[in-house]
Image (cartoon, rainbow, N blue to C red; front, side, top):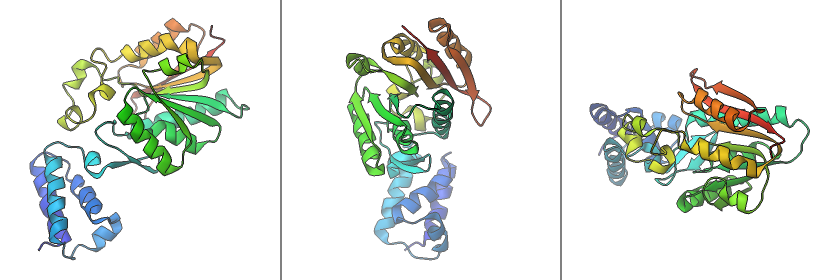
Length: 288
């Protein structure tokens, strides 16, 4: 019978030898034992039940084979909240928290007095953006779209668990909103922006396990921005804030696309905490 320390030491060494992140061992063990990190560290000399160790060993071997830790535990933290995740949704990234920050900040500047902002999250996935916006400010009346019914089920579960009021609609980009003649004040999206070429360079943990359709457009990484630009005039109100997450090399291309479709728009590229282009936002007025 192994102690918690012995199990953790084995798993850390096993993952390190396999070229995986050794920190995953601690996450998986804490999840298996349903312990907070502080409790886990304080229990190093406690013996593990045989069944717990066998399940932990299975989880470690799954991660060694490439399965993301978040898909094994079924959860990931985003903006201080625990979201359910699975193989149907992209795992929320810290960079996307900065997209939420940008929406909150810019919406305050663009609409200082408007009490209700009709807000659309395009390609919601796990619901990380839509649910967070709905919970962070009552000003946002949030509708979220996704082409994947499985992803929408996950997002709906997250909204229910976290107590967020979000309307979910299955459909391709802005098409379902266009069919309803719905107008939006705020549109936010983290579309598939990884190019086909860049996909080949990604870790197998990402490339072989996260949903391909949420990662790449199968081309240059810009197709979805182009499609969104074409659809935006059908759904934006007289004045609208648009916020897109982008790949770190795409700032100029997406900014130029905005200026091509909306010559009078105010457009800015914002860097993330690592100093890389990560967000393009635009304010569009009186579009017809």
